Length: 487
Image (cartoon, rainbow, N blue to C red; front, side):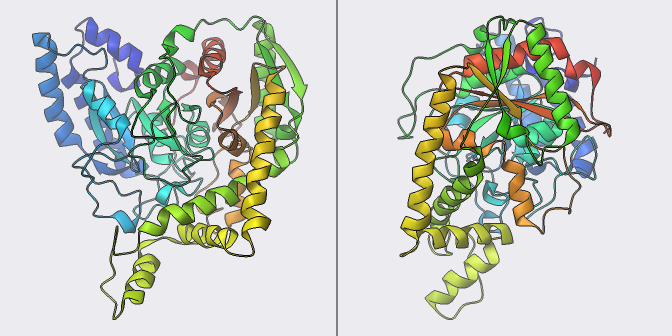
């Protein structure tokens, strides 16, 4: 039995049956990290030694009957913009190269309470700004399906680590598709929850009205299990929603009879790869066979979503990253003769090119004379986007779109062309603008064997609906049984 190929719910079954120990599981993942990390480059900070020590302690607790959680002894990987007490949290930036977080994010507190094992902090685009994980200060993460291609971004390290079986599951963050798009590129499942369902306390902010933490997993059941853990109200986050706790695993009924699926035609137009379109059309036929209604519909705001997203996201990034100035937070330049030099040189040397690009754009759209023309207008369009989704969800339970218009592209082919890189988010950004839940599940591979992702979008707090729709498809299609990375 290859322990690292098991899903988390399979690991749980083996732990409960005493066929595996927490130490067995952790050591298997540590061995895989040592074997594959040199090729995949998924981690910024590995905690393998600490993980083995912690696993031994957790196993003792399990044997004494002191560990009551069903997740005790299960390893996990954490995206490097989620604060982890006593561990470097760099956001893959020189600006935070030596920052050791003095506190835990709320999601980390929940993970620690379950006696889970942290295997390390995962690589990402700097400050979560990018769609390929090529904009990390430290390294370029590779896609386990083809090491010459990108894993997607910004949660590329998280998706690549799950796909390469270096972690059984991971946490990512999604501002405009940063969980779903890398999940699509790496052939895993990525869930972006409804805005406010999961606490953002301890997540280093990129764009506060768009950011959301979510799971990247091997299958849909694991996504439901991890969402059960991380969802919930948090007084430390003023945008956190106080709603009744739900067991998302109970939604996985393997039945979509009567489900109404809308297919927005705007997401299937120019720019969508022919093979991606074909696989999605096959998925639609699968849903029809399973008893769902699948109809073409229109989402008129799709053409404006990308521009709206980049104005709002860059404006909020400009504001959020203002604190990293060499005085209050972050890297301080050794080259200065005045206070102005400290600000200018610390930010010039500490931030990478893509982060600077977005700060400049964000500062511009917030500046006097341009605020009304750009930022205010984008917020007005945002309201229209929400209304348009409300209209469509009056008729449909779920919307089906590509996660990305293409499969993973080769490293270096888009990193010098920001506009082309931004278009990688075209299918995902509207979900964040409207604060909706979305999930990406694999629906096949192209002629070169690269994974293709299908995105299912639900109405606010309808995670149960999209999880069941994704789960039912997954049970029928059996992606993991038929395909695996070449690594």
